[in-house]
Length: 227
Image 1 (cartoon, helix red, strand yellow):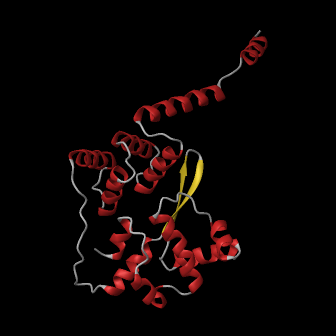
Image 2 (spheres, helix red, strand yellow; image 1 turned 180 degrees about the vertical axis):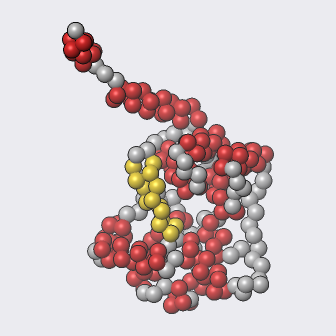
Image 3 (cartoon, helix red, strand yellow; image 1 turned 45 degrees about the horizontal axis):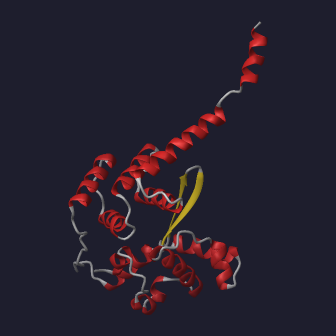
Protein backbone atom coordinates (compact mmCIF):
# COMPACT_ATOMS: atom_id res chain seq x y z
CA UNK A 1 0.00 0.00 0.00
CA UNK A 2 1.39 3.42 -0.93
CA UNK A 3 1.74 6.32 1.53
CA UNK A 4 -1.17 8.06 -0.19
CA UNK A 5 -3.36 4.99 0.37
CA UNK A 6 -2.28 4.73 4.01
CA UNK A 7 -3.38 8.34 4.43
CA UNK A 8 -6.80 7.66 2.90
CA UNK A 9 -7.28 4.62 5.13
CA UNK A 10 -6.83 6.76 8.25
CA UNK A 11 -3.16 6.22 9.08
CA UNK A 12 -2.17 9.04 11.46
CA UNK A 13 1.56 8.24 11.58
CA UNK A 14 3.73 10.65 9.62
CA UNK A 15 5.79 8.61 7.09
CA UNK A 16 9.49 8.50 7.97
CA UNK A 17 10.35 8.87 4.29
CA UNK A 18 8.63 12.25 4.29
CA UNK A 19 11.25 13.55 6.73
CA UNK A 20 14.17 12.19 4.71
CA UNK A 21 12.73 13.65 1.48
CA UNK A 22 11.65 16.92 3.10
CA UNK A 23 13.95 19.09 0.96
CA UNK A 24 12.71 17.38 -2.22
CA UNK A 25 9.08 18.22 -1.49
CA UNK A 26 8.81 21.33 0.71
CA UNK A 27 10.50 24.67 0.09
CA UNK A 28 10.73 25.63 3.75
CA UNK A 29 10.43 24.15 7.23
CA UNK A 30 7.61 26.58 8.01
CA UNK A 31 5.54 25.29 5.09
CA UNK A 32 6.19 21.70 6.19
CA UNK A 33 5.11 22.48 9.76
CA UNK A 34 1.89 24.16 8.59
CA UNK A 35 1.17 21.23 6.29
CA UNK A 36 1.43 18.85 9.26
CA UNK A 37 -1.45 20.60 11.02
CA UNK A 38 -3.77 19.90 8.08
CA UNK A 39 -2.39 16.35 7.85
CA UNK A 40 -3.39 15.93 11.51
CA UNK A 41 -6.86 17.33 10.79
CA UNK A 42 -7.37 14.95 7.86
CA UNK A 43 -6.27 11.86 9.79
CA UNK A 44 -8.13 12.51 13.05
CA UNK A 45 -11.69 13.40 14.03
CA UNK A 46 -10.87 17.11 14.15
CA UNK A 47 -13.56 18.84 12.08
CA UNK A 48 -12.42 22.45 12.07
CA UNK A 49 -8.93 23.95 11.94
CA UNK A 50 -8.64 27.66 11.25
CA UNK A 51 -5.40 29.36 10.16
CA UNK A 52 -5.68 31.47 13.32
CA UNK A 53 -5.42 28.31 15.46
CA UNK A 54 -2.28 27.24 13.60
CA UNK A 55 -0.82 30.74 13.97
CA UNK A 56 -1.43 30.73 17.73
CA UNK A 57 0.11 27.27 18.15
CA UNK A 58 3.25 28.22 16.19
CA UNK A 59 3.63 31.73 17.56
CA UNK A 60 3.21 33.26 14.11
CA UNK A 61 0.78 35.69 12.53
CA UNK A 62 -2.26 34.64 10.52
CA UNK A 63 -0.62 36.32 7.52
CA UNK A 64 2.39 33.99 7.93
CA UNK A 65 0.12 30.93 7.98
CA UNK A 66 -1.88 32.12 4.98
CA UNK A 67 1.40 32.67 3.12
CA UNK A 68 2.44 29.08 3.84
CA UNK A 69 -0.99 27.83 2.72
CA UNK A 70 -0.58 29.75 -0.53
CA UNK A 71 2.89 28.26 -1.01
CA UNK A 72 1.59 24.74 -0.37
CA UNK A 73 -1.30 25.09 -2.79
CA UNK A 74 0.95 26.64 -5.45
CA UNK A 75 3.34 23.68 -5.10
CA UNK A 76 0.36 21.28 -5.27
CA UNK A 77 1.09 19.92 -1.79
CA UNK A 78 -2.21 21.06 -0.25
CA UNK A 79 -5.62 21.16 -1.87
CA UNK A 80 -8.00 23.87 -0.64
CA UNK A 81 -11.67 23.76 -1.61
CA UNK A 82 -14.48 26.11 -0.69
CA UNK A 83 -18.04 24.79 -0.52
CA UNK A 84 -21.36 26.30 0.52
CA UNK A 85 -23.34 24.29 3.06
CA UNK A 86 -26.66 25.46 4.51
CA UNK A 87 -25.88 29.01 3.45
CA UNK A 88 -22.47 29.01 5.13
CA UNK A 89 -19.06 28.86 3.47
CA UNK A 90 -16.82 26.00 4.59
CA UNK A 91 -13.16 25.60 3.63
CA UNK A 92 -11.82 22.05 3.23
CA UNK A 93 -8.07 21.37 3.38
CA UNK A 94 -6.71 18.16 1.85
CA UNK A 95 -3.10 17.32 2.77
CA UNK A 96 -2.90 14.17 0.65
CA UNK A 97 -1.24 15.71 -2.48
CA UNK A 98 2.08 15.89 -0.62
CA UNK A 99 1.95 12.13 -0.10
CA UNK A 100 1.30 11.61 -3.80
CA UNK A 101 4.49 13.60 -4.41
CA UNK A 102 6.33 11.33 -1.97
CA UNK A 103 5.04 8.22 -3.74
CA UNK A 104 6.20 9.65 -7.06
CA UNK A 105 9.71 10.09 -5.62
CA UNK A 106 9.93 6.59 -4.17
CA UNK A 107 8.23 4.48 -6.83
CA UNK A 108 9.37 4.08 -10.39
CA UNK A 109 6.72 4.62 -13.10
CA UNK A 110 6.80 0.94 -14.07
CA UNK A 111 6.30 -0.28 -10.50
CA UNK A 112 2.81 -1.38 -9.58
CA UNK A 113 1.75 -0.45 -6.08
CA UNK A 114 -0.77 -2.79 -4.43
CA UNK A 115 -4.28 -1.38 -4.45
CA UNK A 116 -6.36 -1.51 -1.31
CA UNK A 117 -9.80 -2.89 -2.08
CA UNK A 118 -12.77 -2.09 0.15
CA UNK A 119 -14.54 -5.04 1.69
CA UNK A 120 -17.70 -5.73 -0.29
CA UNK A 121 -20.95 -6.32 1.57
CA UNK A 122 -24.50 -6.27 0.25
CA UNK A 123 -25.24 -2.99 2.05
CA UNK A 124 -22.08 -1.37 0.72
CA UNK A 125 -22.67 -2.75 -2.78
CA UNK A 126 -26.23 -1.39 -2.86
CA UNK A 127 -25.04 1.99 -1.62
CA UNK A 128 -22.33 2.16 -4.29
CA UNK A 129 -24.96 1.34 -6.94
CA UNK A 130 -27.13 4.20 -5.64
CA UNK A 131 -24.21 6.62 -5.77
CA UNK A 132 -23.22 5.66 -9.30
CA UNK A 133 -26.82 5.93 -10.49
CA UNK A 134 -27.32 9.38 -8.92
CA UNK A 135 -23.91 10.72 -10.00
CA UNK A 136 -24.02 9.14 -13.45
CA UNK A 137 -20.47 7.80 -13.13
CA UNK A 138 -18.38 5.19 -11.37
CA UNK A 139 -16.88 6.01 -7.99
CA UNK A 140 -13.11 6.45 -7.73
CA UNK A 141 -11.04 4.18 -5.42
CA UNK A 142 -10.73 7.12 -3.00
CA UNK A 143 -14.51 7.64 -2.93
CA UNK A 144 -15.09 3.92 -2.37
CA UNK A 145 -12.69 3.90 0.59
CA UNK A 146 -14.21 7.05 2.09
CA UNK A 147 -17.73 5.67 1.66
CA UNK A 148 -16.79 2.44 3.41
CA UNK A 149 -15.05 4.41 6.16
CA UNK A 150 -18.22 6.43 6.73
CA UNK A 151 -20.18 3.20 7.23
CA UNK A 152 -17.68 1.19 9.26
CA UNK A 153 -15.73 3.76 11.28
CA UNK A 154 -18.26 6.57 11.65
CA UNK A 155 -21.16 4.07 11.85
CA UNK A 156 -23.30 6.24 9.60
CA UNK A 157 -26.72 4.85 8.70
CA UNK A 158 -26.70 3.98 4.95
CA UNK A 159 -30.07 5.74 4.56
CA UNK A 160 -28.54 8.90 6.05
CA UNK A 161 -25.70 8.65 3.52
CA UNK A 162 -28.30 8.33 0.74
CA UNK A 163 -30.08 11.42 2.08
CA UNK A 164 -26.82 13.40 2.00
CA UNK A 165 -26.23 12.18 -1.55
CA UNK A 166 -29.67 13.37 -2.65
CA UNK A 167 -29.16 16.77 -1.02
CA UNK A 168 -25.78 17.15 -2.75
CA UNK A 169 -27.25 16.20 -6.14
CA UNK A 170 -30.14 18.62 -5.57
CA UNK A 171 -27.63 21.41 -4.89
CA UNK A 172 -25.54 20.47 -7.94
CA UNK A 173 -22.52 19.52 -5.77
CA UNK A 174 -21.72 16.00 -6.90
CA UNK A 175 -18.40 15.45 -5.12
CA UNK A 176 -17.54 13.42 -2.04
CA UNK A 177 -16.14 16.38 -0.06
CA UNK A 178 -19.51 18.13 -0.19
CA UNK A 179 -21.41 14.96 0.74
CA UNK A 180 -19.00 14.31 3.61
CA UNK A 181 -19.42 17.91 4.80
CA UNK A 182 -23.20 17.37 4.94
CA UNK A 183 -22.74 14.18 6.98
CA UNK A 184 -20.26 15.89 9.29
CA UNK A 185 -22.68 18.78 9.82
CA UNK A 186 -25.51 16.39 10.65
CA UNK A 187 -23.34 14.50 13.15
CA UNK A 188 -22.56 17.79 14.88
CA UNK A 189 -26.29 18.41 15.17
CA UNK A 190 -26.86 14.92 16.59
CA UNK A 191 -28.66 13.69 13.48
CA UNK A 192 -28.04 9.96 13.02
CA UNK A 193 -31.25 8.57 11.49
CA UNK A 194 -33.25 9.19 8.33
CA UNK A 195 -36.23 10.24 10.41
CA UNK A 196 -34.18 12.99 12.05
CA UNK A 197 -33.01 14.13 8.62
CA UNK A 198 -36.63 14.38 7.42
CA UNK A 199 -37.71 16.18 10.60
CA UNK A 200 -34.86 18.66 10.15
CA UNK A 201 -35.88 19.26 6.54
CA UNK A 202 -39.51 19.79 7.55
CA UNK A 203 -38.52 22.23 10.30
CA UNK A 204 -36.38 24.23 7.86
CA UNK A 205 -39.23 24.37 5.33
CA UNK A 206 -41.68 25.55 7.99
CA UNK A 207 -39.19 28.18 9.15
CA UNK A 208 -38.73 29.37 5.58
CA UNK A 209 -42.50 29.60 5.07
CA UNK A 210 -42.84 31.59 8.28
CA UNK A 211 -40.16 34.02 7.17
CA UNK A 212 -41.87 34.74 3.83
CA UNK A 213 -45.50 34.64 5.03
CA UNK A 214 -47.47 37.90 4.77
CA UNK A 215 -49.18 39.23 7.90
CA UNK A 216 -52.94 39.82 8.10
CA UNK A 217 -52.33 43.54 8.82
CA UNK A 218 -50.42 43.86 5.54
CA UNK A 219 -53.21 42.13 3.60
CA UNK A 220 -55.85 44.38 5.21
CA UNK A 221 -53.81 47.44 4.25
CA UNK A 222 -53.61 46.23 0.67
CA UNK A 223 -57.39 45.77 0.61
CA UNK A 224 -57.83 49.42 1.55
CA UNK A 225 -55.76 50.45 -1.43
CA UNK A 226 -57.83 48.17 -3.63
CA UNK A 227 -61.00 50.09 -2.69
